[in-house]
Image (cartoon, rainbow, N blue to C red):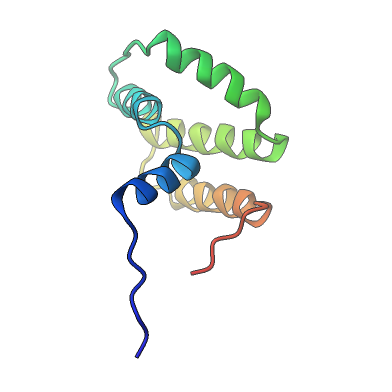
Amino acid sequence: MATKKTETKPSFLADRKKVHGEFKIQADIAQSLKETARGRIVEISDETREHLLQRWETLPAHQREALDMILHKAARILAGDNEHDDHWRDIGGYAKRAEELCEHKTIV
C-alpha cells in the first residue's frame, strides 16, 4: 500500500511561494487583472508595480508573447463575440505553446 506524503504547513507554504510567488504581490496582480476585465481600473501598490516591471524583463520572449496574446484574445472576447470559439481555442494554444517550452516540468 502506498503511503501518503505529508507536508508540514511551513514547508508547503514555502514551496507554494517558490512556485507561485509572494502571495501579497500575486493577489494584487490577479485582482487588478480581474477588475480590469470587469471594467474597473484599480491601482496596484508600488511594490507590485516594481515587481512586475522587474519580472517582465526576466521572462523569455516566448512567455511574454504568450501572455500578450492570451490577454489580447481575452480582450477580443470581452469586446466582441464571446461565442466565437476561435478566441478560446487560441488562448489554449498560446498557453500550450508556452507550457511546451517550460524548463521545469510538473509530473502529473
